Image (cartoon, rainbow over all chains, first blue to last red; front, side, top):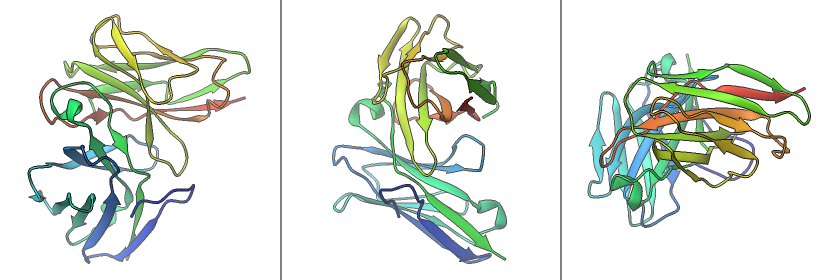
Length: 117
Length: 113
């Protein structure tokens, strides 16, 4: 999950296992959430998003769960592959953003996912 | 993202020097953003722009300036007033409409000589 400080939380999983990456968000008014994947030296890549009127959304091999009661997001990756190794960020958007405004996103500090062969 | 080009990939700044980072997009997206990323940290918002000739400060705008003269371009200048400029700078765009994710370029890494 996310934490304060210079060291990224690390999650190490075996290839083929499922991965679960957690994120606590800060603003109870946020109503749109995004997960990004960032490989070394590259920009973040969009994975999946979810609106606050949903509690689950599925994509290809990924599922995002949203628990608004405790302000918690999780990203589940099924059958983890070596190409999934990266840093994963959650981002939250304020109501003005999700309503079409240009406000920026607020990012968590990221979790480093390491795949063991 | 293929539609967002940041240049240069690496940039070095001398003391007292201003440097400009380029961000060009061909996605026809309205909103553009600049973020700063420090090692082991998330992204922090520097400036953003919703339309041409309009931009707003983000959370850490001090020591930076931007312009938006064309829809396709949103250059960031790191001025000499920014005392700790070493970081990875990311440009993002977003299409108009509700609940749209931002899309990112591949960044410029700025270092001090």
